[in-house]
Length: 382
Ligand SMILES: Cc1ncc(COP(=O)(O)O)c(C=O)c1O
Image (cartoon, rainbow, N blue to C red; front, side, top):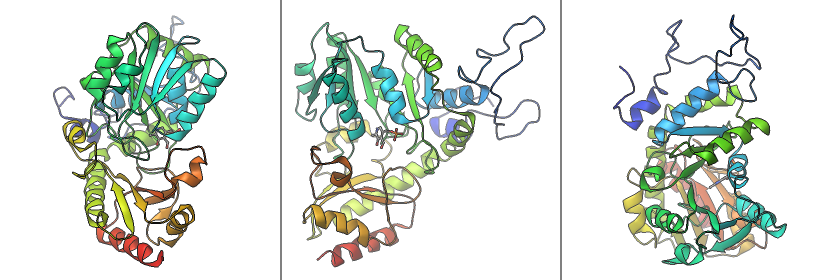
């Protein structure tokens, strides 16, 4: 059976039918070679004969991620931020970028630093306000509109099709950080996005043991060719072992994501009326301001990410993370183990994140254990 006309779950479970042709091994080998011999005519056997350009394990992992996102091609990088800033590097000098205020803070901070030194011009806006993107773009000047949906750690939901129309009408491209939707529940390229980004570190790999980032494109065009060249010239492809681990992780992507979504939904519902919880921010709750868009856009689960606004202050929220016994106090998300983090402490005083926000990455444990753990920590919070 080929992978033509099969559904995304099948593509993921087979890792794109990765059977090794010589031995029949159902798990692909890892090609660790840094260099590849030319043939008898001194021609390259592969598109790249040196690992900085690429290698068979990288090509296999990239084809798999591109297929899951229904994209034309994928580029893998050694971290999520390396992938995002490779894309930002294709913005012309002084070019205009529109991005959300509420987004992964590491990217916001670095975009601001680039704007401060004049490399780009930047509009950081509240994208939950209707029409905000259309108002912020500058026709003919805006090169990149960047959205993150749901956004980390407030889980704002942004309408991808609307953002794409606003970007395209101004002559810009739309890039979507879809880390929280993990190529399972939303396909931004089919909604009009030009480039999708994933911090592969999170759900796609899903085992908290790989740092990586992916860009996936709707079409191979001049910008994509530039990205390919830049990655080789700057020496930033993902290494073969990480590519192999990623393919292994993707095989269980759908079951992991659906289980995390089910656990998260149960937890969000359970604690939304708890006296020590001011608000639960989860796109799968009907009370979430982005719920209607999420329902349209997230067709296979609302994911495992949520935040609680606790009825406490900065110190109380920090203390809460130390009271958890099953959930690990650690950064990152999308792994099998549930994690909790006091984001304001991590992001610093300039961050718009509320002092009392605790972010949860809900994992694959028994949901009753997770509920009991959060309940006992709330009880002891004082
Ligand atoms: C939404 C989002 N985008 C981008 C990144 C950056 O990815 P990485 O840590 O793989 O560099 C993160 C990391 O937490 C993230 O949560």
